[in-house]
Length: 420
Image 1 (spheres, helix red, strand yellow):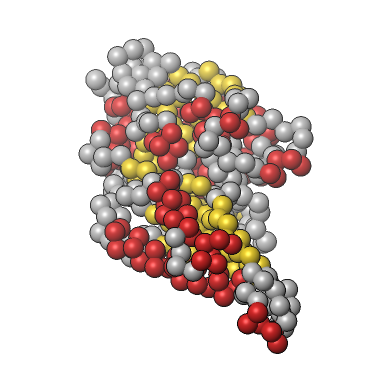
Image 2: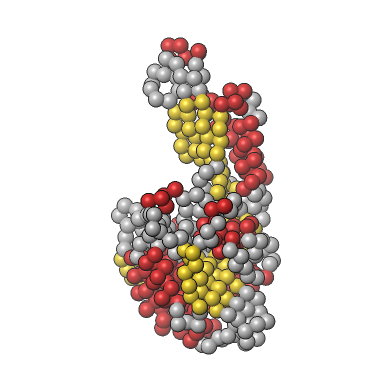
């Protein structure tokens, strides 16, 4: 197999990137938060047409909501005419190679106060695009556009089938990725593109949010000992949860791939509300929080652990008057072997084109866990950009990083899929 020389590809990208950066900046101006992704889907569909790909908008399967991994999105009720759909672009291979899915998402979070939208020349990093979604994840879409332009320009014919899955609803739980998996789309490998600083992640942390309701008995504080304080019971339950956190920390210390993180797992209580009057015993309390966990725990295990803590609590009142639910964020952990060909070949491709990259676990959750846990597919996370700036008013994307990642991906695609 002979791949196109990497320095030729880099020179091509350097010539192409000004126009692609213009396109990306305009793409970031298009609204694509929940329920309003149609214009972005249309623009992306048009951009990939004519590059040797078959491009189409793919509606979500009608029975997707019956899938146990589907995340309810109540906010969609305010968009009665909204079509839930993804964009699929495929490039059929000539045979004899491995198939590959390159995936990223089109949707963004709502704008922050003071959201910047401008282009800046940085003396060290070159051009920076400040815009919502610039690196999470429309910069990933632009990177894929560069890769597809290179394959078309150099006439590179792949052995294995290549598919781009450009999904929606990633930011609210991953239903777009689930739609493809539920419909039966499969490949020999998947690269989920997120702003990972071009690091390669064959594993990521999971996150599970919980909601707890505690009933008490309200009473005037002058007779408080005749009542039951839901706040006091909540404090006791939180203490039990923090003991569980200690167990998670102990069992996760030094876990392979996550050694560099000082605090890779945690149990956080983010909301604690109770009572209605300062001089009354609280008759109810609500607790909401989340657990971050490594691949040595599946999400189902963490859920069962929290339910057990409530059901076996030493305080009978807590056992009998507490409800626990998991109706919000439900992102599982995942990992594949670090010596699997997917991360090792991507790592070698990055090194071959001069991109500094390491292979380790990501202390973030994303769509990759669905391809692994639900689809049973080998998957890694990789992409240009820095997640630290995402979801905030100063989100930005370095154009030079896009070139590096596109060089690495183009090299990898040829080696993974084979060249005919």
